[in-house]
Amino acid sequence: MLRYTNQTLSNDTFEFSDSVSVYANQYLNIKSSSENITDVKVFDVLGKQFLAKTKLVKTKLV
Image (cartoon, rainbow, N blue to C red; front, side, top):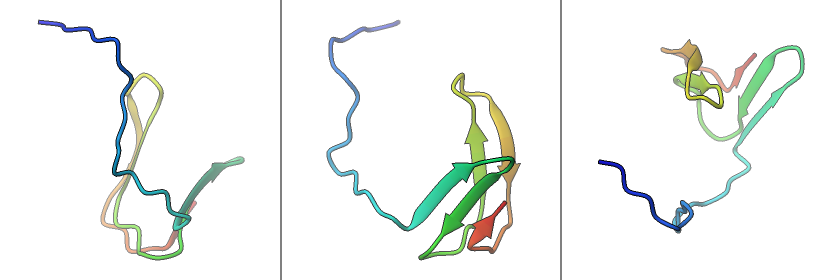
């Protein structure tokens, strides 16, 4: 069953933080200034996963 509503998705408790930055040039760069990165999953706009890294203990991933 599909149900359509005339509302947008939202999250009232979302807190923005500068602790993680993600940018791309030739490579995807992910940097955390407050905690170690333990795993990363990246999805395209269609929801298809095209990158998965696990068992990491880093503050920067290129």
